[in-house]
Image (cartoon, rainbow, N blue to C red; front, top):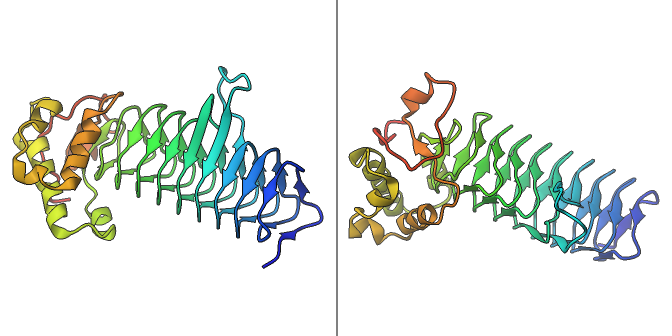
Amino acid sequence: MPTVIHPTAIIDSQAQIHPTVHAGPYAVIEGPVKIGAHCHLHAHAKVTGPTTLGNGNTIHSFAVIGDAPQDLKFKDQTSELVIGDNNIFREHVTVHRGTNGITRIGSNCFLMVGSHVGHNAVVHDFVTLVNGARLGGHSEVYQRAIVGAGCAIHQNARVGRLAMVTNNCAQLGDIPPYCISTHTAVVTQINHVGLRRSGMSKPAIDAVRQMFKLLMRDLAGVPLPKAIGQLPPELLAHPEVREFVEFVKTTKRGVAKFQPWSQTTKEKGGGDAVDANNDDDGQNQ
């Protein structure tokens, strides 16, 4: 399919556009931008650079992709945004370039209305940012994680693979893989539905559940790094368990603590970002 550029679209002479790109009315492609095959910019969408988009990306009206970082330290240093394939950026999404570095978005992500990705953030494949979700600078969201509507991830904080953050909360520290967080700095249970939908095997899911029960209930009161040292070899034989362990070991901002779902429904707030000391396994959620 040939390039379809509306007469009112504004295309910078520096831009490199694949012949199959579609740019709607008043779309703007500004600066050193590279756009791959079959990308579609809706009316009034804007891409500025240095930015590289892979193939099959869709950018809806009034989204701004690749603008300068919101960082007072930024003084026109190296700054770039790199985006993979088949992502959807809905209306009013903003994604900023890095400060003296790169902001990265993988492939097959869904960024819903009004969500934001800050400078130097890393968003892995198949991530969903729901309406109004916000990622601070240098944050990282791993594969198939979901950041719910109105939720905020603090700068340098991480959300692990297949984790879910919801209930309009903010996260100052790390949310480990496979966990659900509904309050600030708290995890309440395993994301059972997400694990099943991801295609994870039943033995792997069972191992994750056993690990969660052991760390969050049986070893309650033991600091999480020490509790991890007591995981039996049969659980550590599962790559999914080792992924959780490695995530916790590499935290810089601390890991959210565990709080049973029954307690979070009675309390409006969460706790501080500390190692998990727990008294429930969340198995009846």
